[in-house]
Image (cartoon, rainbow, N blue to C red):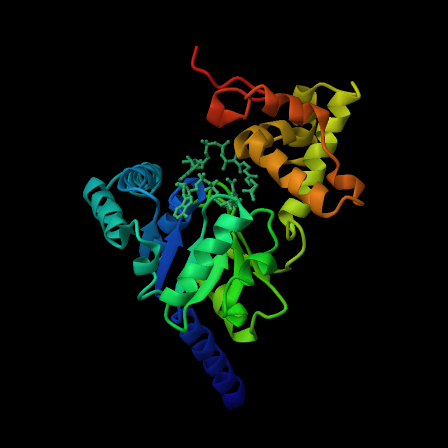
Length: 311
Ligand SMILES: C[C@H](O)CC(=O)SCCNC(=O)CCNC(=O)[C@H](O)C(C)(C)COP(=O)(O)OP(=O)(O)OC[C@H]1O[C@@H](n2cnc3c(N)ncnc32)[C@H](O)[C@@H]1OP(=O)(O)O
Ligand SMILES: NC(=O)c1ccc[n+]([C@@H]2O[C@H](COP(=O)([O-])OP(=O)(O)OC[C@H]3O[C@@H](n4cnc5c(N)ncnc54)[C@H](O)[C@@H]3O)[C@@H](O)[C@H]2O)c1
């Protein structure tokens, strides 16, 4: 019994000290994903530095975090408006902003990159951060579709490099994919998994394969739905209804594509088609290409498969 207790205490101490390993986080990119990641990291007690290209963009990022926190306050502090105000101000107080990414990593335990999905831009950023960040700082990318290993080669710290793939909307989606490349050390991987749990996410272990787990299944499924419509086998609305009511998905594949962005879906698919031309699942969709060519990119552009313009 005493032995079990000692083992339990020791394993708790190990996990707990590992959970404390990451205290300060630099989130680079304050867009849709970066602002959500910064919000959740700060909500779970981490000190966050959020970086973007201009103060104007960072102002918008902070405003979107505030708006998202208000949705939480409305539910959690319905009877306690003062408590709600304190909750928001405590979280915002843990987020500072910076436009100089090298300066932002000076005291960072972890960097989470959430900038534009472009391999050259990501490599340039990490190559520069590698010289500016302390030795112990772990680097991660939130990329949806690029190989983590192809980004990590821009640094001299591949043992301290991995992927943290969050899902949109970050405050609501409970999953975090933790991705390792062959060079990622066990210590780094454990710290990343513990950090995910400290962020109150459920983590899954992923290898550096195209789309990791979720996008590797979600993207071909969505494209197959588009092919079904291209063949005239079903309308896109019926496909959405069928997958929501028949398979229990919160959104059908066309609603989800509009939500993610049709340009993003096309970008992911085109990248994989070029890199893995032999895989039939990654072949282009004429329907998707048509919508993107017409500038119908989904909710963000006001129209995709559905219309989002206020009448
Ligand atoms: C491409 C990338 O690499 C990978 C990806 O990200 S793929 C995309 C993954 N995401 C998905 O699959 C999303 C699927 N959709 C959903 O889970 C749900 O439709 C949704 C959570 C987005 C919205 O839920 P829905 O019930 O339709 O709408 P809504 O009523 O507005 O919101 C539900 C709750 O979420 C909360 N919420 C939604 N967005 C929020 C946000 N950004 N911040 C805080 N709270 C939020 C709302 O306040 C609401 O809370 P309540 O039910 O307690 O009042
Ligand atoms: N949108 C999604 O559903 C989703 C989900 C999971 C992962 N991702 C991935 O997350 C990353 C970001 O996606 P997003 O949807 O948040 O994009 P976004 O366009 O909303 O935000 C990107 C932000 O990065 C900033 N930025 C660009 N280059 C920069 C640089 N060099 N330094 C600092 N800031 C820079 C831009 O100004 C912008 O604010 C991408 O790699 C994407 O594949 C997206």
